[in-house]
Image 1: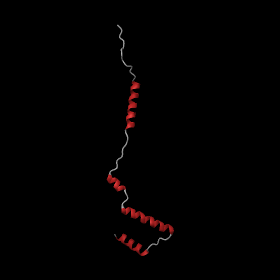
Image 2: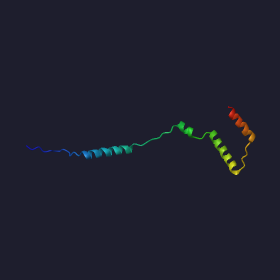
Image 3: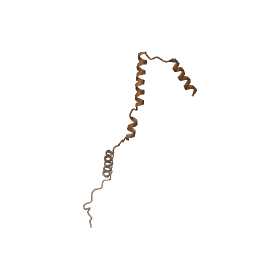
Image 4: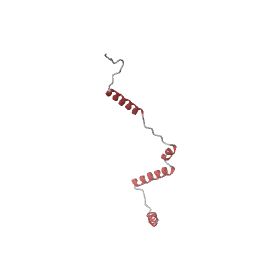
Amino acid sequence: MKINRINLPAVNPYKANQLKAEQAEQQNKLKTDKLEISSKAKQLSEMSPIATERNERVQQLKKQVESGTYQVDADQLASNLVKYFKK
């Protein structure tokens, strides 16, 4: 008696592994990273009025130093140094 294989698909383990790898790769492509910034973080990242004023003052001092018009008040500098080191 002879038994014939009827309607059995050909099994190729290498092809099955390849298909699994391709499917995994496609799923990885669909995944993307997301970044959400809270409103509090946005608010903190904005320049505060104090920082803006300080930045303007620094720019003003830079211009004075570059042009050679910046004058140091020696008495005030000395008193500030004494206050700092007495802490």
